[in-house]
Length: 342
Image 1 (tube, one colour):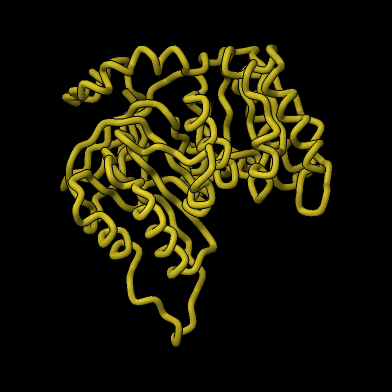
Image 2: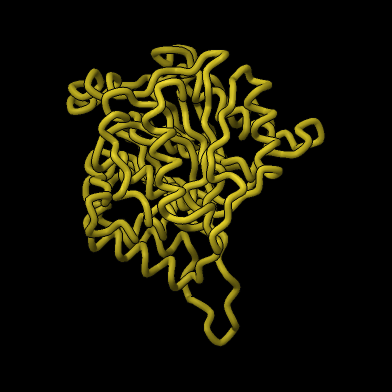
């Protein structure tokens, strides 16, 4: 997949894309409020903090990310949790909470990059104080288990965040990394600098064509399901929802999708994006009878919003940076899928 067929830089107003974007009334009314809450763009010399609110990672393993961030012109502050180990966690709950709180409150740190996922964000999320952060927001970056953070931010503060690769996904030697791996890493820098992105995905025969405009939200399906009933459960009204997961049996994916449907999360969607799903292998005796596409379609038969499959987001090499909580347009046609930030 080459750059022209997938990733483009969108100029302000999207005029360079040739797209006719007409915002619905609710989106036009909320655009000013949303933009005021968007963290500021980063510039050369700004400091990015690296912390591990979930799983353990060594100091050595974050070095490729540090080098790349510095190459982009940023300075890096490595948090106290990097290199700490408490079982599978990057330090105790208190240590991880304290390190993340420091990153949130430190005015000199302009963005926070989570070092890796795993498990652990949910253990500290309710202990964090977002008061100072809400008054002076900054970009918080990560995916997988960090979906807990994205969901909490959207539901509780309304402040956008970046769903993207983390330190453990930066290539040790960018010069020999594949083009798609380099582009996914570059997309993080683009989002931090405020460059609006246009993403293209190839046509999929199971896509449902249409166009929708809404705030882009989502992430790891299992994590989103686990937020149900909490103050971090997302309100999907007038939103575009993206989902991805890994390491689940197909029946478990089906169960989680039913949970989202029964909770009403599909009721007023403007679009649904299905990213990478790496399911566990089943035995022939326990083979689940539905494909992922069939699972999805049976949950949304009564809805009109567009749906696309195999979008480049998730636990895979082609995991591009997405701005959660920011208005996007999703267009699904016989030519493929276009997702563009407005």
